[in-house]
Length: 280
Ligand code: NAD
Image (cartoon, rainbow, N blue to C red):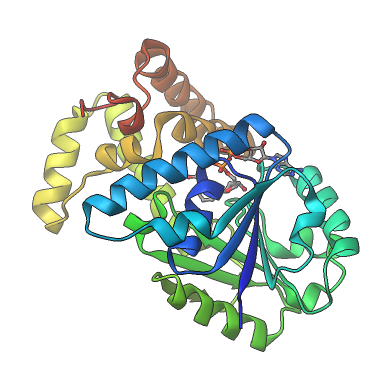
């Protein structure tokens, strides 16, 4: 039974993950190395509370369920720790080594990494049969799911326990049977977005036409460029650059630079900023 959770990293995803857990009446401690981020995280929680109040949901208890700390030792009594810090292999490994000294043998440690595999991190976790990836999507409550992906030594009971936990925080668990970079969602999404980018940036059609045909043909409510606006164009650019380098793909690099020049450099960075491919 998971009664207390530590969320390490109070940034974009950490603030959302900690909120959805607190809302389900589970105690959460948010840890971050940056006090300014902890202050911002608290502010975001107050904003999320207003959002949920508007939906008629009482949030007083949820706000009281959260505490904030810059001391890693404060995760000591947690049943589950969700790491959601910067996407950097060495920094994550270093954190897991420190955590392994602090936490109990029974504690489950999960990573919210987007691009790494649990097997690439597991050697830095002492009880690695209790280590897995638990991947949330942004925005967590609108997406409504979390992907669960163990590595070869992750215990079956840990997967089951996390599946129940995900249900408890009102998300739909999606289980992967083996490791896949990008999980299910990104393994499907990235090639699709990449095809759309190619059609637009290579001049085949305007992005509005590409979105239009996708929505008409598939009866979807969102087209690829509307989805890129939700993800944020800076993230899209970073993914394009990293794929271009990995695949040594010059055309992809050119498309990424065009996205930067025509959109990011003009302050058009997606839905959160009010403007991206579309205005909000
Ligand atoms: P972010 O930059 O908004 O937040 C990361 C936070 O980690 C920062 O506040 C930073 O101060 C903190 N941090 C760095 N090192 C730390 C340490 N050693 N101990 C404690 N705190 C530390 O990043 P984010 O977008 O929230 O992403 C966090 C993780 O979630 C990444 O692994 C990312 O791949 C994953 N993720 C992100 C998204 C997304 O849409 N942003 C979606 C799914 C998963």
